[in-house]
Image (cartoon, rainbow, N blue to C red; front, side, top):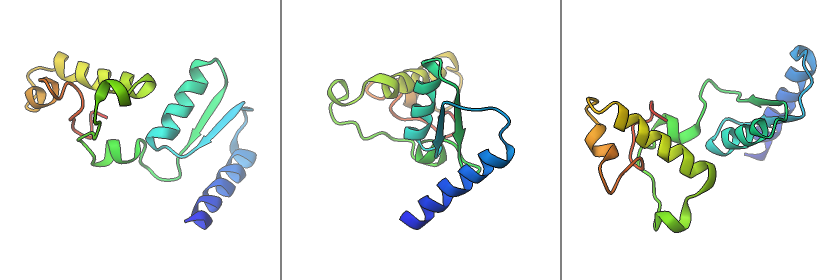
Length: 120
């Protein structure tokens, strides 16, 4: 597993060295939810940011198949950018109320915690 990650980092550095014509303050390697949130936080801080994902998938399991969130006590465990993400998911279904999954995904107790991966 570590060899694969090291290979990805090396390939990302080689790619940036060869093809990037812009210098970046932050380069995030990996488009998992954590990588995406890191890149968003960096960009929101007015820092030039590049997000690299070696595969064709951005968002990891949240956008590729995991549509139910294990959250325990929501108010105690989820905040910050993760909470913003789930609020935006809930807003998608509230504004698209004709969508077949709208009731399941926007009605309490779900309210954005259960969603279709393409919405993520």
